[in-house]
Amino acid sequence: MKYNRQKDMLSYIREKKTVKNEELLQKFNVSIQTLRRDLNKLEEQGVVSKVYGGVVFNETRESISSVSSMKERSTANNEEKEYVGRLAAGMVQDGDVIFIDSGSTAYRMLHYMQYLKNVTVISHSIDVLQEIRGMNNIVGIGVGGVIDHNTGSFLMDTSLYTYNCNKAFISTVGISVSRNLTNTVLNEGAIKAAVMSHSAVNYIVADHSKFDVIAYNRFADFSKIDGIITDRCPDEKFVSFFENNNIKLIY
Image 1 (cartoon, one colour):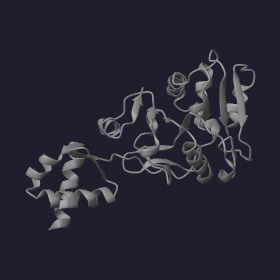
Image 2 (cartoon, helix red, strand yellow; image 1 turned 45 degrees about the vertical axis):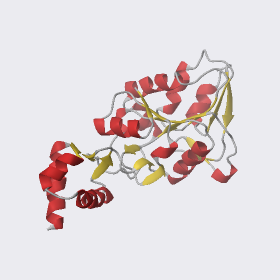
Image 3 (cartoon, helix red, strand yellow; image 1 turned 30 degrees about the vertical axis):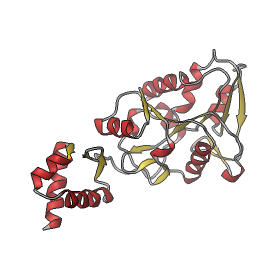
Image 4 (cartoon, one colour; image 1 turned 120 degrees about the vertical axis):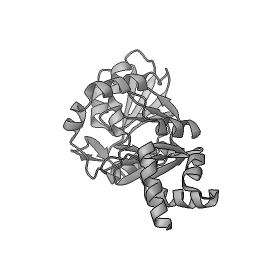
């Protein structure tokens, strides 16, 4: 029966992790049309993701439904986040106008921007604005609103956001091939989406722990992203997916 075939196919993909379409056609003795229907069904269930010429199993960890406090997030994976921040700072040039997000990774890039000239930083993050104090080479623009004590940022009406920038550095709770970019605070997600629509180039800054994680709020899909900055090379399914979608992987 069709259900049993899909179940067996899923077990086979889970064991192999990555499988070519030709291999599945031979293994299950089905037509290309039937294979496509089966894979579409499995992808709808979120258990696999189709990539160019094949399919990968989604080894996604449990969905995240809430965000940790800023203090907890700042101390977790500290060395990795510092490394990502240094890489992100390397993407900034003299004269840039950039947005830095409120995540515990993004603001680390300021530590490595002391020698840049005439850079303007826009942010709704309290940590980013505090870090800018005393950095005479940076013009800081704070996006105001109501303070969210848990995230350490200002929550604002996104319809009032009018700033344009040439680069945005956005944090995320989860990166998933099947579910895209997700977070756990709706207002934060709305701000991320608004910023990305006003930026010429968008980078996601995330350490390795964010890959294969899904939170409940999808704030953007990969079509909005130009690059992902992380501390180590992710699984092959991500590498292949990013290459096929012209997303630069920086690590």
